Length: 188
Image 1 (cartoon, rainbow, N blue to C red):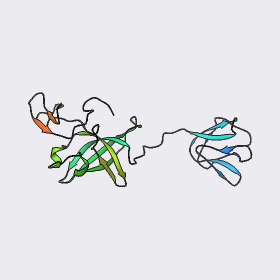
Image 2: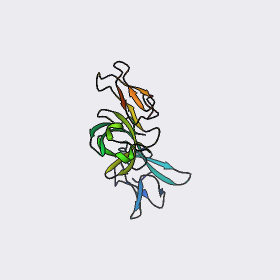
Image 3: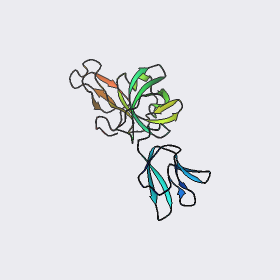
Image 4: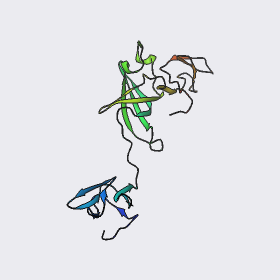
């Protein structure tokens, strides 16, 4: 890039300009007297502070790290943990992800729980927080975490929250769950 080309599309490793002209900003790096792009994006110059940035042209994949909130479906119940098929990551709601994480029985709620089936059932939609990312371990201890949608195992219609229990409005089947305070509100 000989002349300043605002808005030019660059690839990772593309030379943008000499370091005498500008300083490296976001998504750029300095090497051998030049500033290079570290991502696919569009060049942006800030003449006030003589800085150059590259604005991403594609969204980065969702990052699964401790503290991140995820949505998923309970796909497997074991005696001491459940497997969650993670479908969405908070902040990236428009992007579907396909990952799996686990919730250990000790990470379901603050108080004692006698069995996994007292917290979750296969098919439940849960909101959980990432505790560790490799492997992905989750928790539902916080009040706003837990089951956000569940279906009656007898007749298949959405269950209603009745305290810490879920009840089917049609057949009156009752089932204990670790229910989120956001149950059926649509809040992520």
